[in-house]
Image (cartoon, rainbow, N blue to C red; front, side, top):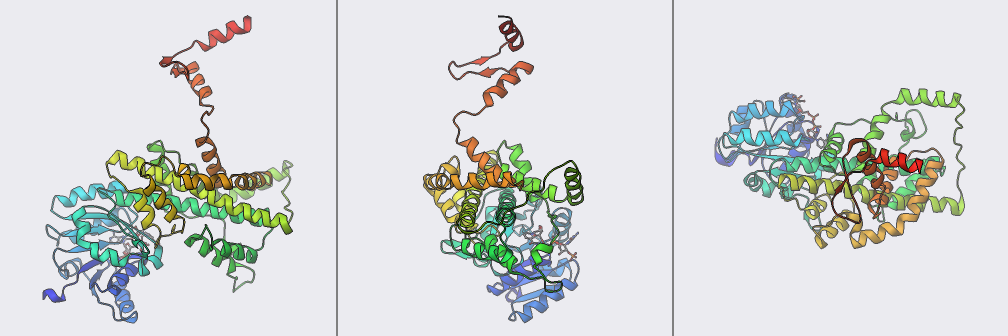
Length: 489
Ligand code: NBP
């Protein structure tokens, strides 16, 4: 094949993500070859490339033709289901690849799988990247946030492409070289954990406004629309506004009210919480959002429990629709509670990233990560710019809530935050994410917590010893003996 006819890059795996990312790459002027195990998807992609502007995209029906259609050193993006399909695809493609070529896995892969593959492919001189891709279908097509980690040389091989393909914000494209090993996948995993937290907190704001405040869906749409023009401006608030506006065309009423309250999930939130536990990082808001997904799955059990507890005399909360100044106050309080809760959730995610970075020597730049999440991805939000600036001011910032600017904002919102949580608890409406964030904040800000008593208990039953606040050293006390002698005396 003439080198002029060879493609600049290849993409294997043409489901939702692969197809859209391939079209995006072609649209940015990089000739691309595509391949998929089921060949009908190749035809589908060719058809779209034709319809969407005769984009420079060529289809291939077997791994060999696909690999040989690429300029050397070759770069191939894989976007198949994470796990074994990635290994199978690597095996099928790498057979035809050469030393110096690059494989980029764009899936939501467990970071240790990427680290294993980096070693396996390195044996044959093939460079490897694990690249988190966020933004769903629309992001892939029009500009995602990209988180490539692994071989730096591999990154350099595709830097010109990813910089054009990624979402563009005022301070650059939403892509940066993340670090070595599986860091790109790890960062994407934590991004998804933060996304779980954001979605949970937004759903709690909705729950309180609807079931405590008595707001209708059209009022909710108006409020979210207004919020999206202020400090909460973000993709998730924007799409939530739209969701409240959609009618059930077929059966009448509003569609959001007809959706079964059971949340699906694919595992990245669970991995985030597992990693937080492994690294002894408190991530209660993200953990609460995961727990809520688990509890949402118990639909039949929850319905049965409601009946049992009603039978046992539990009174159903009957909300009073708020009006006038009370209603206005609740809406404003919920906005502030949502913002403050979000900061705590991001603080947890960022601290998890920092802890992993220390453990693995990845040297992650937290400010830069906040920057590449400003566009393209699901958690994109105006306030990420403030997070970026907080880490630029102080790269060693212990926690976002003690950045001078965020500290001021937390204090300003504290009263509203407590009012919302109190009112929700009083009404039996669960706000586990907001409560977890508030408890995180309250614990973090207290110079003295009741851990002294826990230490005493540990020393009592397990002779684990304790430290004192006034004299250095490790101490053990015969608690039982002393307590008995004190009763006698
Ligand atoms: P899916 O995760 O649904 O995977 C479907 C693709 O995997 C198809 O191309 C399929 O080929 C291929 N595949 C499978 Br399944 N088993 C294979 C095997 N043994 N050998 C070769 N190919 C195989 O696709 P997706 O939703 O586009 O997601 C791709 C990746 O991107 C995943 O890791 C996902 O977690 C991640 N991601 C998805 C989103 C999203 O919004 N969907 C967002 C961000 C990241 P076939 O057509 O022959 O069955």
